[in-house]
Image 1 (cartoon, rainbow, N blue to C red):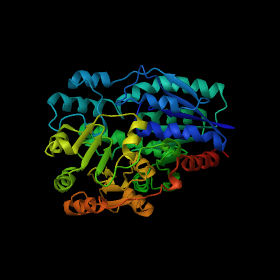
Image 2 (image 1 turned 120 degrees about the vertical axis):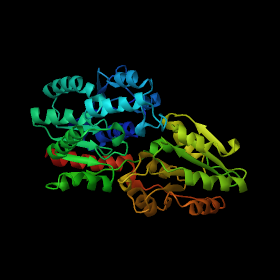
Image 3 (image 1 turned 135 degrees about the horizontal axis):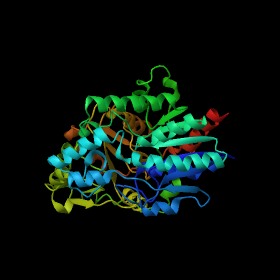
Image 4 (image 1 turned 60 degrees about the vertical axis):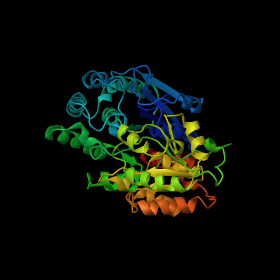
Length: 425
């Protein structure tokens, strides 16, 4: 059996979609004759926005895991900004009208900690990785980001050991929708662009999660765009056993799971739902996860008997909430590259077999997956009347959907194993 060293900052007990991506790859890789060895950060040194200790029980017992300390620069952010919380993607846990301290802290982060503050882990990760590569017969390495600083570990190891290296980029780098919130100077931006291009050029293969994101990265290395491959996120059927049933038609529950930052265009939907709730007394709009303060204000304009606001829950509980819903809400943030956004929860939404209401670009990658799988409907986020019409239609129907097996974690791991086989042959 060949061995692959997977270097990822996010690993249980951290929560989030990025954790589940590599946790599931590690689970299924041995079926395709690859032994995963995990190199990650020690939780005692890490800066995780959210924790999900239930994921620790999903780690296969045979998986070898090496954890190292880290020097976390988020302590600087906390001191400068006066906020003791680790910021979520899009800074959903900060107020829209950020204080001068918060803006200054972001400027420091964007211009003095390039590509990101978690690069303080790199030294320790490199020392451990070098030791493993010298002692073990490792055939390939994989680095997963964000944090994009992790990719610099792969770059260094590939140069030193001449080992095949896959760079997994789950999110955009310089095109991420909150990039400008770091107020990068021209010099900082040029440096980020240089690092991004170098990673794409020097890796043996780069993989990402959507066709549009593949095209975005390919534009940066026009000489060799074919080296960028797509492996989407997916769902593990084992996670979807013995789930609660959907509510009866008398109670319509629509659920959103995940972070709801200010950049997510929520208000037209809220107006439509408020109208819907006025004529359907059993209607409930449920949010699970972090919601920005500005959106909380908007949500509270709806009568409280029609609203459920639930903080972050562990993975299993989130799936149970999805399953106990009549429909599921998916919103794509408003930014110029949003056609390539395919969130990990899309596939888990599909796996619980509830209709999905996608608000975002109808010609985007997520909309294409929903339409091909007949898993719901995609509507532009500002189409209030169309949103209301869809909810009125769904409340009268029982939807029996099927999950597409090509998005199962086992099928996706097979694609990864084929790439590994190719670059190590």
